[in-house]
Length: 173
Image (cartoon, rainbow, N blue to C red):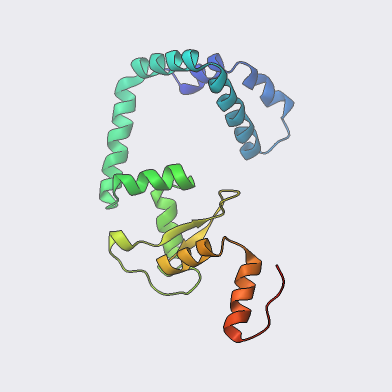
């Protein structure tokens, strides 16, 4: 089987040079820089990227199909829906196992109100994330998730809301 990295360096020859220039970067920083370079390259060369992708798929189709089949089986064993898994991976960049570990870490409760989430799949805890950085913060119930969204993730608004509920004067925004 031809590895994806073989095609990667064919597509992005400068990325090998980027590695040496950034030898002292952390692995995460290096990968982020390579991904950014790759996105830029693909935006400039969509036809070449499409041709390489097709070539890779044709050369490795049985392995790709087997990997997908095993992933679907694992997801079914966990009792997870394809749409929900897709949103975890593509919206938040986490795997279902990461989500389940977060649920276990929070004892199945909302990170804010500490109420236990219903066990039905349609009422899971929501993945709370920072909209500016994309960093996942924790899991919230629907009301707490909505409250954060309605207050626009602004700490001053939360503080004023608390002061309002306590009957104290507001602070200027």
